[in-house]
Structures are given as structure tokens and as C-alpha cells.
Length: 64
Picture (cartoon, rainbow, N blue to C red):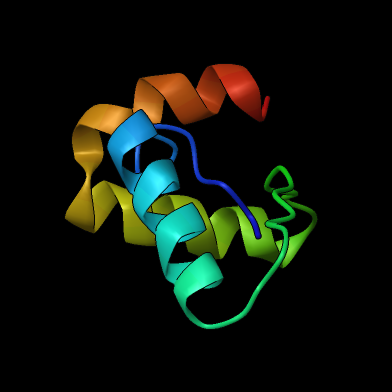
């Protein structure tokens, strides 16, 4: 947790996560959505603009 839209929510990554979890004895994977409140949103969007600027439009729609 959390699953980050456009960053780590692809099928290939999620399947690898499930395999890795099972390989280390895990019996389930719990995924949750990202929450951005107060200063978290500002910090995250600033970091995203530096590393994945193409995702800013998606995140501005998901987290108005």
C-alpha cells in the first residue's frame, strides 16, 4: 500500500508483487489507494513533477 496510479498499478507489477509475497510466506496482498491531505499533496506533486511530469494531469484529476 498504496497503489500509485500510473506508477505501480500495472498488471505485471501487481503479479510480481503477489508472487514475491507468496515466495516469502505471505498469504494475501492488501492494496489501498493513495490519500493526499494537506502538505502531503504538495510534497508528492512536487516530487512527481520532477520524476514523472507526464502524470501530473492524471493526478490533478484524481486528487483535485
